[in-house]
Image (cartoon, rainbow, N blue to C red; front, side):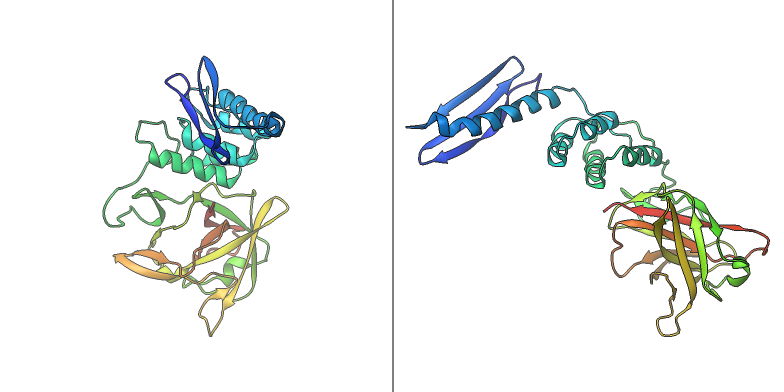
Amino acid sequence: MVGTGRFELPACRLGGDRSIHLSYVPTQLSLTWIAVGYNWKKMTHLLKSILILVVLALGVFGQESMNNEGIMKLVKSGMSEDLIVSVIRHQPGIYLLGANELVTLKEAGVSERLITEMLDKGKGDTSPQPSATPKPVVAAKKAMVPGPGLFYKKNGEYFELITEDVEWKTSGAMNNILSAGIVKKDLNGELAGPSSRNFLTNPIEIVISTAKGLTVHSYILLPLKLEDGARSFKVGPVNKKSGVAKGAIAFGAEKLGENMFRMVIPTALGPGEYGILAAVPSDATTPTSKIFTFRILI
């Protein structure tokens, strides 16, 4: 690492007994040759490539610690994604990865692959770090969470899923939903904004602590479609053969305790936006209802 020692690149084989070895320290750059009968003209392209990598390394690794702003600067500079991944993995860094920060990173053009690397870096770093993530509600061997609500598991702890308002595009929508999770006719709903503020990575674990008067069957898992800067969904009556509401994703339930269930999703959800609608009927004059949302990064 720069400032504390020597940085070395693996030796490059040139054929036969020839090879090149490259290393540098903060105050000097050295090339060590172990070659016999090499041709300088043939080595020109290789030398240029190596020197370019050294310059980039000196500029990037010279920083003491990386952070969100540093990653956004690297992305904006046009640096390749593979090189930025290497920086995240090998350079010390303190990353703030709460919901607001993740949205800012996405808006700055930081890819989900890089965000995942930053999340993994945080998992592997045991040093104290500031955090903008929600305070864990409980850490226990069993999924014990304060209810009612929906909670996702991260690093052995449970965090509450944030809800959003649904704007129904179908008139009288709330009169066509029963508390048992039964939808009487096709309904169209819309959510403001292009992304949920809950970011999850596979494998996901979601626990449902049901509210009074509801059962686990009152919840409907739906894929959300991005349209004109907003997210939308369609849900309809239950299919008599599959037992799943039209447009919904099937899931099972494992009982953990009284009014507490773990969602069991047969097939891992792909990257994208999702919502869990609690089928709670209300007065027909109410134009909105709540939906638990999350985004799968990878």
